[in-house]
Image (cartoon, rainbow, N blue to C red; front, side):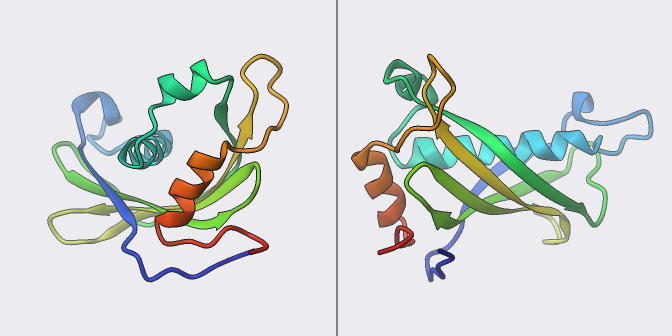
Length: 147
């Protein structure tokens, strides 16, 4: 179920380093996916859950599907604002809409949708999110699907 929220999307700030760019000084396209992954991880941490803690509880989040559109290039030393807006919360998956914007002029550089599945670390089979984690995501401004 797709739900609308009035809450501000989570924003992670990062900087473009030399290692993020190609020979022309432009961010290599796959690195936008890394920036978005970091924003999702930081959103999880902001809710009080560390990836390392979840692994200890036999839980991993894995990207099930991704879609990205590239609008304009980021360059060396640009400061980026990377959002991680939860748009769908299911029993064993999350769907995010994410954007990468340049902080200096708010230009949209890349946006995409990502479905992240909750799986067991030992078998990589789907599992339900723990109630506390699901409640934390639901409390961040989005109603769980089906409720």
